[in-house]
Image 1 (cartoon, rainbow, N blue to C red):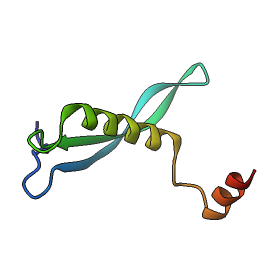
Image 2 (spheres, rainbow, N blue to C red):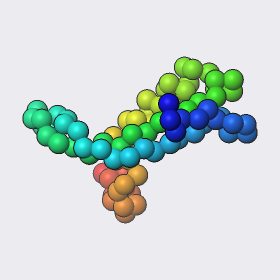
Image 3 (tube, one colour):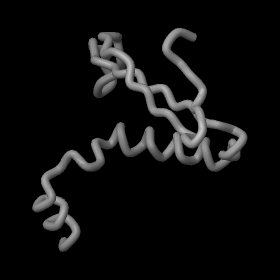
Length: 82
């Protein structure tokens, strides 16, 4: 695994971004070429239990795929008030 390193103390988590590649993916029920960015999450299992780590990675994936945090703060405030 070139480029993947286990976390070293005092760090218990590493997030590593890879390159953007073009691959076929499903968009609105059709196959289209999409750009994909690889993200590697390395965890120190001596300090982080597997179940909470899995929940964290799942939630991180959901937030990234939804575009969370990419909206302007004014738009977020407006959506919260409705």
